[in-house]
Amino acid sequence: MSDENSSEVFTRIKTHFPPAKIKKIMQTDEDIGKVSQATPVITGRSLEFFIAMLVSRSGLVAKEMGCKRISGDVMKKTIMTDEKFDFLREMMCGNGAEKKSDSEE
Image (cartoon, rainbow, N blue to C red; front, top):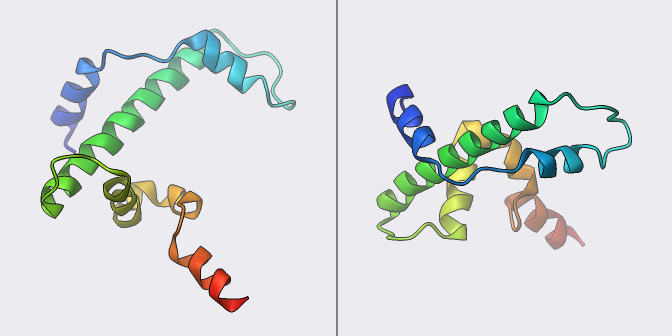
């Protein structure tokens, strides 16, 4: 996704994550004390941008696969093939590592 594309997608986002809810989630961690006013806002905007990028990339993968919808399988393929989402791979259901450990038992 180019910079022009990403900024265009980002400006079209209508759904925003409420900063109060984000702050509440952040403070469920015992190690986090006070949170500055800007932190939940920045976190929410970052989350919106991340989701927009994931959906955009998943749309491209869906087109390559000949699908008209972004399904769980399409998102899984996006996460498994795109290096930007490699940190999500270990959380994927049914990935190769889990299947390998199940067959060893």
